[in-house]
Image (cartoon, rainbow, N blue to C red; front, side):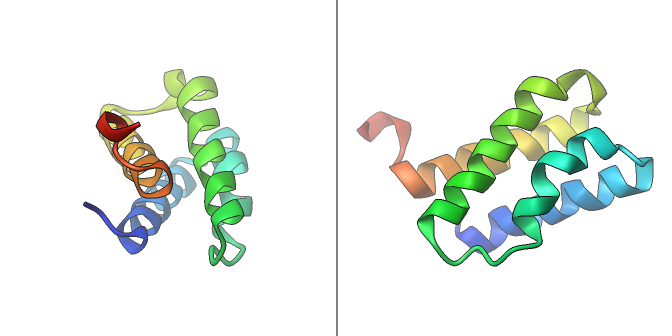
Length: 88
């Protein structure tokens, strides 16, 4: 199972990639969550919602490698917060 640090690192990687491409629309969803402390479950849920929004609203703007990172970060965070899908 992945830890929170690796999920946050993946989100920072995505933010760096989007900054390099000046992809403001995608950044607008995750930056507010990455700039605040992620110490509580509700803050992590907010990040999960932001990742869902990017997946749904920005997919056409994303490169294949970004989609892979995004999907992994989303799935790992969802598993950390709610348990693996098989156990739900």
